[in-house]
Length: 392
Ligand SMILES: C[S@@+](CC[C@H](N)C(=O)[O-])C[C@H]1O[C@@H](n2cnc3c(N)ncnc32)[C@H](O)[C@@H]1O
Image (cartoon, rainbow, N blue to C red):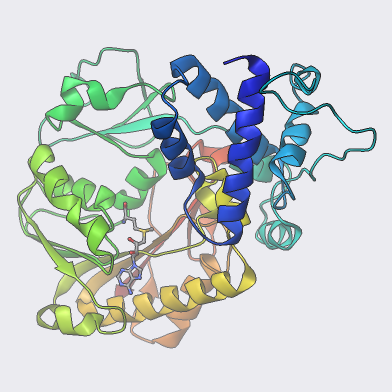
């Protein structure tokens, strides 16, 4: 493909991504993957270039752009190689109109930037939300240890005790160490959030929002496969991915429970008041993960944020019922908005006299409310709020 054809393709993909974000449809990654699957003439260099253009343009626009072309013009303001390709050549973008405007820049839609600023995420902290994320690994201590693990490329230890950092795009899935379960791909912030659970061998631990089990697997390793680890989620698809992952990782102490929204208590009735620890890795706006999903900021609206906050508080109350007296509830969100983090947790503590804040001691982050906050700018991780409460 010519450079101009790549730009035109990126513009058309951006149009699809914008429409999909407005309709809360497929994410950008999936739209790109499908296009690449259906257009085999695009070679690996084309695909890499198109991907760079698309994600560069998404990062460059704050609010949802009107069109892919306006988004590309925004990117062109920081990359002088792009504008000359609007030359009307075959397969390339049509020539620039005299008063054609670029889309608006910034960090996010204005309402969201305001909310971030109110949570002290502004300036460099806000800009870093749109950096490129590194590729982090967790060394699976059931099968290997960080000090002696041999990998095909150089890696650097992170703040997490079993974390290693690599260049983004390193093809770790093709490595033997990945296939035989010695390493997992997991952001250092996620690994640090798991430390807050302090899961011990022999305990009963519930991962209430386990998803595909990224954190469950880390907890199993800390528990040395001993004790009961319940992985629960309402999403059948995600939860079904945990089995094969656990097998690869040599994890044997997980029990999965598929929950029905609003009927979670039915599937968990035998565990009420029994858990030593409950991890609530709650569904959230994901403002701390924009480095990986920059167009997620175009999908969020105030109604969705309010809905998420309600689910978070509902799940915290459920966790309070599941934990035994003397046990602990660990709350994690990958959002940097206080209404999903520090304020949410403070309201939880205020609802029950039995609960006491136990701010976790973690190898990174800074205190925020009754918990700890990790940010891309300060910690080089995804953004997280992590807090712990003990039940009397
Ligand atoms: C942040 S994600 C979890 C990520 C996962 N813990 C990991 O480390 O990969 C939040 C999860 O909460 C789940 N969820 C949403 N509502 C729920 C509910 N009522 N009960 C349990 N899980 C729920 C979602 O399906 C989603 O998988």
